[in-house]
Image (cartoon, rainbow, N blue to C red; front, side):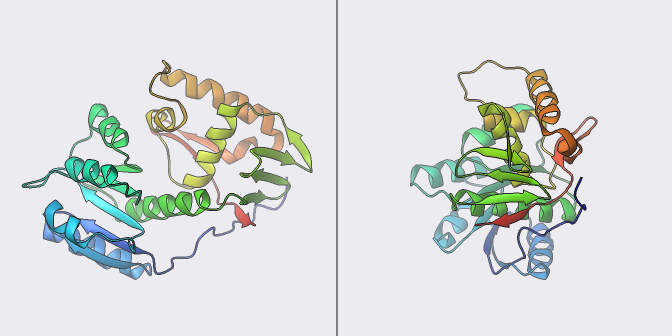
Amino acid sequence: MANASIYRIMEAMRERILVVDDEKDICNILQFNLENEGFEVEVAYSAEEALKKLSDSHSLVILDVMMEGMSGFKMAEKVRKEGNTVPIIFLTAKNAENDMLKGFSLGGDDYITKPFSVKEVLARVKAVLKRTAMAQSSSTKWVYGDLVIDMSSNRVTVKDKEVPLTKKEFEILALLVQSAPTILTRSEILNKVWSDNEFVLDRTVDVHITRLRKKLGDYASLILNRSGFGYYLNTDLKIEK
């Protein structure tokens, strides 16, 4: 195994984030901490106000679901119908699985429940922005020691030897890499990797990850499971283009 040097994929740049919540204290907390990480932050205290402020210059929206007037779900639906693909992280007191799935079905990129940890919010913001940056670059390669994940060709190699992954195995690995170090629940992995018309169980994720780990050999330990939470990659990988 190569030295476990951890590379930062993405330094906090001046990405512009729109925080939408009718609780001013929450807006203030998020704005303060996000700006400390180097982000440019704008706030709106309603969905109606947010729609007026939202522009192509925004890199991400943190959107509360339960607000007076238009809900966050309604706002997200309107934004997506208008063809705006800006990443959206839903922020809500609701934690039911149906609410989470509804958020993803409306085009949400992540879902955080209140009360939240500021560290978790920051980690998820960076993970979503990282995934977005990766998706916009078809020539990206992710590298860790002798492990290379080539997104343009959907190939994984170890010491220049190809690892024979199935389509689903590659998609799960790519999702974990893009999300690192955020923990992804089985439901999140199912929602992002399998289509709506495929009937699969949570156990399906476990089976695929077991096979994926076996094929990765010495690099299997990169994929960890936190009991009761989900799966995550225990390091960031260096980007090469």
